[in-house]
Length: 89
Image (cartoon, rainbow, N blue to C red; front, side, top):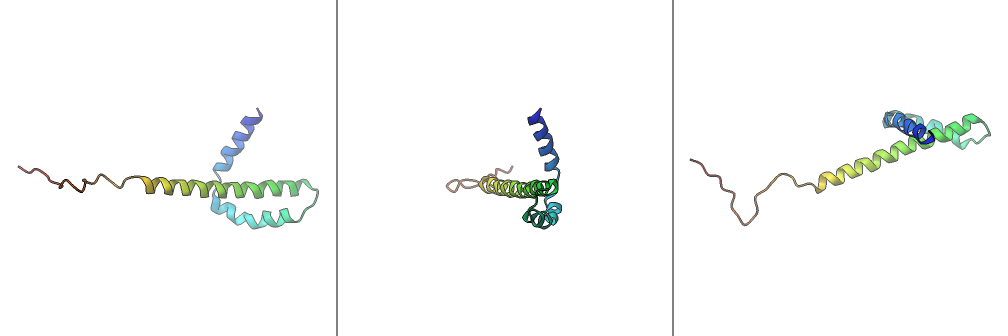
């Protein structure tokens, strides 16, 4: 049950747009830095780290996509020692 709840939360977080979250980053950073013992402060800390988690996830994802694209061959090329010939009738 607990794990399923976390998975549902993660599913909802994955739908959030990083650009929209970036606009909230400063707000929650400032709120988090002004410590108090309220439930609102606790929620601000969680929200701040969720925003950072999405940013880090996207950075890792984009880096891995770029790496995989750079390692894939760019189409089939003929080998250098055999001329590329095409038979025409």
